[in-house]
Amino acid sequence: MKPLVVILALMLPTVCHAAAEVPSFASGTTYAKARTSLRSLGWLPAPQASRRCPELRRDMCNDRQPEIVSCAAAAGGACSARWRRGRLIIEVRTVGEQPATVARVCRTKCR
Image 1: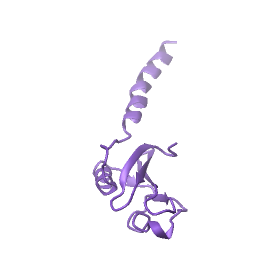
Image 2: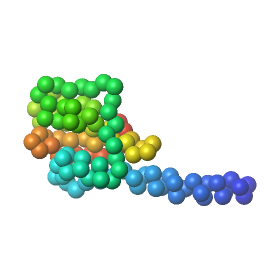
Image 3: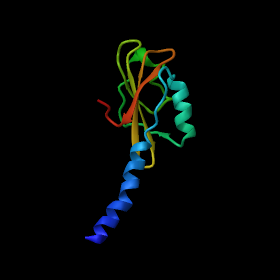
């Protein structure tokens, strides 16, 4: 029983630390600023094999931003970007355009 308690005690800080690794941004932060911040914190774009990139959203969904996974078809619609640091993958959702702002950051597949 004692070894199990020790193992759980050693795992707890790791689990809590992983939950704290998801970055947050102040309301109104532009995606450009968030992107720069993520890169400086060691996050890397996590490009996907397929992307949903409507022609109207080439401002976000382009070769310079491989982390963008999808954007809504309407101008100003939401976009989703995936970032990776180690084994943790996060999703950054944006709203608006020129400049797009961060709406939400969560582990992948935000709801």
